Image 1 (cartoon, one colour):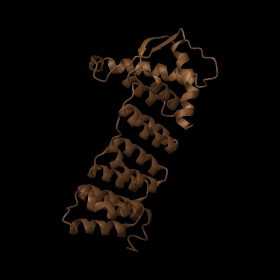
Image 2 (cartoon, one colour):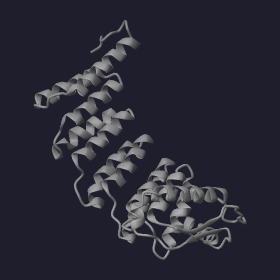
Image 3 (cartoon, rainbow, N blue to C red):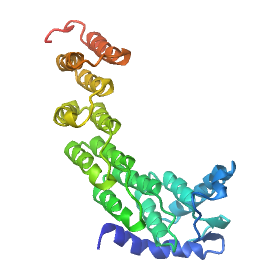
Image 4 (cartoon, rainbow, N blue to C red):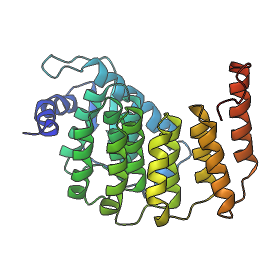
Length: 280
């Protein structure tokens, strides 16, 4: 039995019992994203208040094997996609409760699920490095007639890189087209390079760029990201090499590109005034 299935069976009675508390009535009906309620200017505030109350109850009654008592009075709450999403946002630091609540939502007759809700939970789980469960959620989306988007994978990729799992992140990028059924855009490719560079993995970013740049159209943003990455780790020789390469390719550096390069040089000069640029 998978971790998701175990969590679902363990938590189903917990969330079902919430429905029968005299002081808490969460109806199982879900509303469509196209309903008029979503156009109500007070709707966001209403869902925000409901999400705040629900998240507090879930956190307070986090153990499904203990009796639950609550003084909160919630009446007539419909678990809609928007309410589900806002509740998950409030459970971002409680991955176990978020997963259990999501599994409860999946068990409803008309699950109020959306690609956005899957993305939120994938981010919550990946934040605590539960990558296997995150991948399983991506696979499960098809069961609810939902399709992962580029954002789904970019969320996972960012978390993988932040954990130092750069190779897994690159593989996830390569797998994106299979799931999303469209080729990653230049913007998606730039996001991969940028995230790798910001977390200090510019060598991997440069390797990926050199390997895959023929499948995209290299632009000033991609080169600027790499120049920044090399400057970040003090490799101004490599930063200058990429600066020259972009010029040779007919890509004109912009103000941001030169600022990134000059700021890197100035930062090194201030930290190592005697060394200056020796060693370039």
